[in-house]
Amino acid sequence: MEILLASLMMIWGNVTATHPDTNIEQLVQASLEAKNAIVQVTPAPTEVAVDPLAPINKKDPQKDAPVVKGIYVTAHSADGGRMEKLVKLMDDTALNAMVIDVKDDWGYVTWNTGNPELEAMGTTNKIIADMPKLMNTLTEHKIYPIARIVVFKDTVLAKKRPDLSFVNPDGTLWGNSKNPPDSFVNPYNKEVWDYNIAVAKEAVKAGFKEIQFDYVRFPEGFEKRADILKYTKDDRSRIDAVAQFVKYAREQIEPLGARVSVDIFGYAASVPAAEGIGQDFVKISENVDVISPMVYPSHYSEGWFGSKVPDAAPFATINGAMIDTNKKLAPIEKSGLKPVIRPWIQDFTASWVKGYIKYGKHEVEEQIRGLEANGIHEFLLWNANNNYTADVNY
Image (cartoon, rainbow, N blue to C red; front, side, top):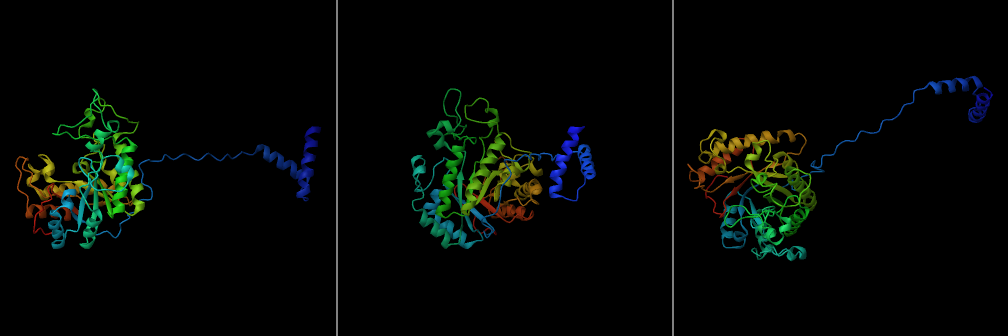
């Protein structure tokens, strides 16, 4: 008791030094209240899981871009005599954009970038002899320039660097069933990412306003051989690996002032996810400025959108595909993450399809009508040989 009293007197002396009106009774009462008080402990903040695929500061760097109505142009066409005819098509119609191969379907970089690291890769094939001249032509004719880069289908790089590709159990490079076979490089590999982004950055320096990535996926049917082939991988799903490449690419390219767009299978909008090839329509769309579903009627099989032969029903096929596309992207519209929808449509005759029809002015216009019926005003025309139908009302 004496010890307790002595302690209180000591405390009282310290307290009255700063609070002279305090008496001993108040000090004892305060001590008792402190003894019985419930200590309030501030809980540690709850950790919020960070979605590695969530876009950061996504802003369209080309807000003044035109409503794009474009055509596909090979590097050979861009550098050859056909270019004059294609430019005239632009001048004479409402078409206003060209998607030009700067890294083609084989994997060749199609012009001399002047980048020593890219040159050292040995993957350049100088098809476009004078890139500044080409860009001047596009500027003079008010043609919006889009650079097409074929990403993971890359036979050239796969042959040079099998370690970046997929290898058969016997040690040979994997290729698909085409003749000659195509090979793909590995979407899990960041070195592959950086290589393609380096090409993209050089294209932006050259004057392209948009980078369009094509073949942003694993090979078709990959799920059937994923456990047989030898390649580097990690714990990510194929869908996440592909989507993270797209996010990374946009973060690298957007600050340069160029848009990022991605070509994607049209049916990806109509199914939950194409897990085999690693394409998720929504996850990719969230991280691009423009999404270009390839909705060629000839690529849909019997029964799609109520048509026995979708190729022979261009309006119904495009209309159905766009209904699915809008529905698929509706959940991300309010968040401001919905990209511009700019589909690839068909300006070629698919003679290999049973029940096909010949495509011309009417068929192209029917596809455009299917787009317009769903509030979609941008499109790209595909013809592998760059022979486009005249007199179409675009």
